[in-house]
Amino acid sequence: MSYFTIEIFFSILVLLTSYFLTSLALFHGYIPGGIERIKEKNGKIRDIIHFWRIFVACFLIASLFSGLMFYVFVFPTYRLT
Image 1 (cartoon, rainbow, N blue to C red):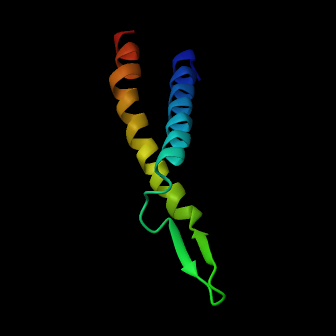
Image 2 (cartoon, rainbow, N blue to C red; image 1 turned 60 degrees about the vertical axis):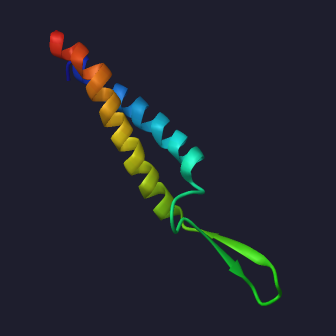
């Protein structure tokens, strides 16, 4: 592995991680089917959280933004060298 491939790998990794955690924090309540409210027989309201739906949606959002930011800001730097 060359120096450039390691830099590119860690750039994508940092972008993907930061955007995943940001989208998870901001959008987890707005994802359809992510949180269901169920009223039990005793009258209490219980929340059921579908983690995989939330994680998959946030991962797709993070992948989109990471790819866009990599293509616009990081990739042109390596294209010149």
